[in-house]
Image (cartoon, rainbow, N blue to C red; front, side, top):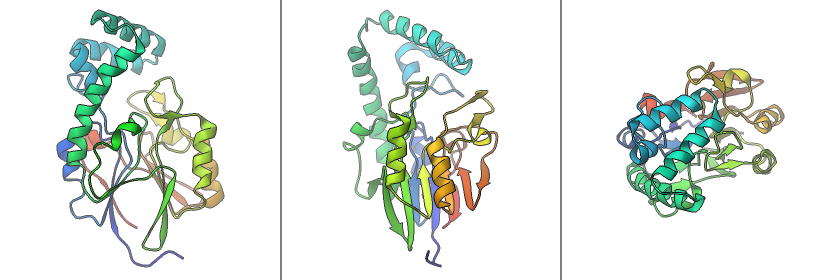
Length: 265
């Protein structure tokens, strides 16, 4: 039985480099939750920002964004490979060395700004193995884990599923499903990606379906948590809908809105 005591919870996802805004995102909350995607590789709203713009310039970023938005992923990879060769990088190892240096710079700024205490999980563009270097006291990372808050079971699962985007933290569907079901029933489910549902998965600006999880949909049908919070889809066709007894809520694109989703749980 869940407690009758409620807590004010601020939830963010898809922070993508919004350091100043996230530093204020916990103000007035009892608990702060971040559902990942801290890194900004590409800024679809402002191509001058992000790691790729720093490496290759704004015009490169604009073209790369156009190709990906048009779902021309193979052409985008060819365009990217040519850009890397243009700066003398010819191997995947060299490429990652340069990217990792930029990721380290962003993580240093981001984790210094992230509120503490907080519950954190990974997004699909995060690099989990680097987080340990930057966590501060009060930062609790949860991935495939459950915590009890005010008599409620809160379950957290980070990362995304394999996709044409080839982002850093993508899992095979069976691996992701196993981590999800291993948590058992929860009262509140927090993930980075949404359940598989056309209204929740379609991005109205990118004009494509992002990857949702069938395992989450099955899990919700089986256990009916009170809430499921997620991000990943920046401009969803529908940000909130009910699956049985479960309210499924996209907490919003924090990089764009710079405001947390606020709820009493």
